[in-house]
Amino acid sequence: MAKWPDLTILELVVGVDDYGSLSAASRQAGLAQPNASRSIRVMERQLGMTLLQRSPTGSTLTPQGTVVAHWARRILAEARQMLEATDSLRTERRTALTVAASMTVAEHLVPSWLGTFGRLHPEVRIHLLVHNSAQVFEDVTSGACDIGFVESPTIPRTLHSLTVARDELVVVVHPKHPWTRRREPISIAELASTSLLVREPGSGTRITLDLALAEYTRAAPLLELGSAAAIRTSVLAGMGPSVMSTLAVADQIKTGELRIIPVQDLVLHRALRAVWNGPRQLSGPEAELVRLVRSPRTSQT
Image 1 (cartoon, rainbow, N blue to C red):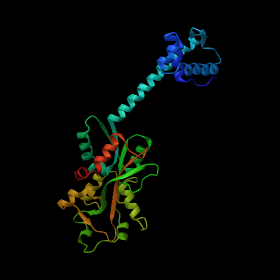
Image 2: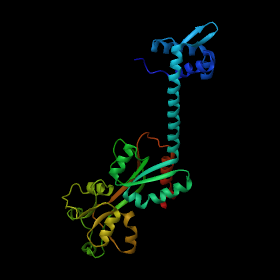
Image 3: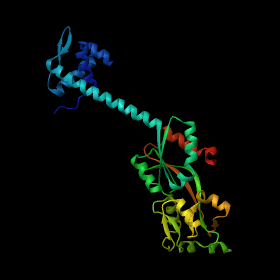
Image 4: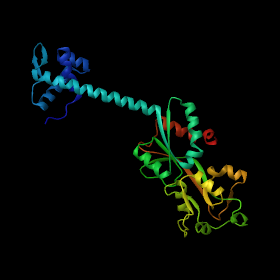
């Protein structure tokens, strides 16, 4: 079987059929006639047949060339449709932005971020996917989203990341919990040996806690829940202590509905990161979103 034909040569063959000569076809294609003639000869060798009838007065298609021109029109039409489709896809990417965010970030930060972005870029349609950090990494890797935001302390090596904000985890309890009567901070070992209300595996909060207590003997979780809101409700109901983001409990701490319990020598600061796949240099709407998120005004909203 012959090699795949060059589309430019196919345009020349069709041009000869349309304009009646190779010189006219080459002008239409923006090629010098000697180059066009050499290209046709290359294709003739590939196909094993003569496509042009050459004469001192010009070149016309042979019967075989006419058949090739017929099929070349169909191939070129399909190629044009493909290019038009890819142009549409590029336009769609410029006017749509899919964001994946882990639970805590999505609940407490993303609404203000996307609100600011939407006011500045009303032409961009925004889609938000909310998962735990592990699923956000999968979405970013697979291309299901354009950019992700996570609270996980570990980032897959295949992805790029950039710190956009910071957060802290604290131990919180109901005001009537026995720990609130302690004069001294609890120890890390005591925290580890206590059954806690925790997020599910794959959550950035859970990963941060597990890494911090990795050297200690751990008690089994009191309960695993799939969102910070569910854990907060459970702590408010007096079910037990938990380690939560300050973002998730700031209002309850202020009103006294929850109490922070200090833990000796344990500080759980963490970075909140944007993560993405592909080129290291961000571009398009996702680059503008990250720029806005990192700006001081947006960070304070």
